[in-house]
Image (cartoon, rainbow, N blue to C red; front, side, top):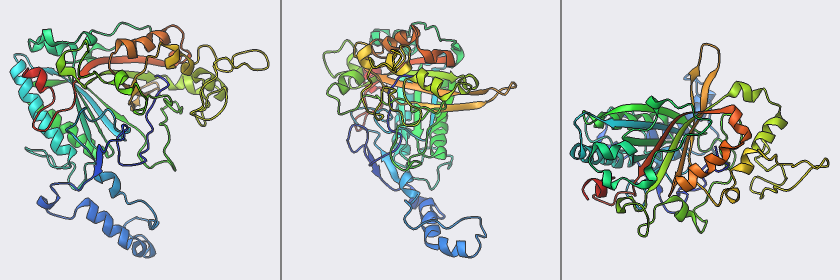
Length: 438
C-alpha cells in the first residue's frame, strides 16, 4: 500500500481530471417501468416526513432535517462510458465495487472474444446511463439511477495466447516478479479478462456484476471474483482522504491530474510508445488482494502504529509536523537525535522522490470476507493501481518495500493480477475493438 490516494468524497460532479465525466441524469428507462420510482418515493417521503414523525413514526422512519441533501443526488450521478480513457480510472472512489476475472472457454478464440467485448461494452454503456440491460434484465437496480456506475475492461497475459494475438501482447504485460510478502493463491490470480465494477449503490453494483456474468454466456467462465467497499460519499462533514481497515488515511500523495506529468505517468501515449497502437490512451492495472493482519496490528500502541506508517493516525499529517499535505521532512530528528520519521516507515519508503519519481494512481477498495474458526478476520485491501508502465510504477515501489517496509509485518499479499486496459471506446466502438479487429 503506497502513500498515495484519491479523496473519497466528491466535491463536484466531475472526474479527477476536471472533465465533466459525471453528470446528473434520471434513469433512462423510468418511463417504461410501472410503479412508483425510487426518486418519487423519496421525494414524497421528504414532503411528508414531519407528518409521519409527528404521528409516532408508525413505519419506523424519523423526520429528516429540511436542509439535508436529498438521497436521490447520489443515484442521479452518471459517468460516461465513451471517452478518451475507460471509466473507473479517474473517477472518485466508489462506495461499492466488484472485481472479476474470466477465462475464455475451451475452444473460444478471437472471434468469440470480440463478440463478448461487444456485448459487454453495450451492457456497460446502458447500465452506466441508468438503463436496463438489453436482454433479460434482472430488475435488481429497478428505480435506481446510475449511481456513478463505472465498468472497466482489461486483458491478461494469457488472453493473447488464447486468441492468437501474441504479436500484439505488450512487453509491459510481462508477469510481475515475485516479492517476499507474496503468498499468492494462483486460483485467485491473473485471468484472460478482467472487469472492474464500481458504484455508489450496492444494488446497482451487483446488478452490473450479474449482467456482465450473464453476458459471458458460454464464451467465458469466472476465474475469481472479489467484493470491496469504501466510505459512502457524503459520510464525512467535508471531503477527506479515505481510511483503510487499519484506521489509517490511506494514500495522501496520489498523483493529481493537475500535475504536469500526470498523463505521462498514468496513461500510454498515443504515439512514441513501446506499447502497441491499440493501447493508446490506456493504462496498466495491478490488482493485489492484500490481507491485513488486524489482530497483530491492533495490539500495537498508537505511537507504534504511527511509526510504522510515518504519519499521524488522527489527520494523516507527517510525523515531522504540519498538516496532511505538508511535505515530509525526512531529515528531522528529535531531542535524542533519532529520525522523527523512522527509516523504515511506509510513507518514507513509498515517496516518489525516494523511488526515482516512480508513481502510480491508486484506486483501491477495502474488503471483509468473514471471520475464520479462530476468530481472525479475513479483511484487508483490494489494491488497484494504474500506471503507464508497471515496471516503472508498481514494481519499482514494491521492490523498495520488499527491502525493509515496517508495514510488511502486518500485511500479506494473497492474490495478484496484471491487466492491459485499453483506451476508452469512441461512439460506435466497443472496448478492445482496435486489438480484436486490427
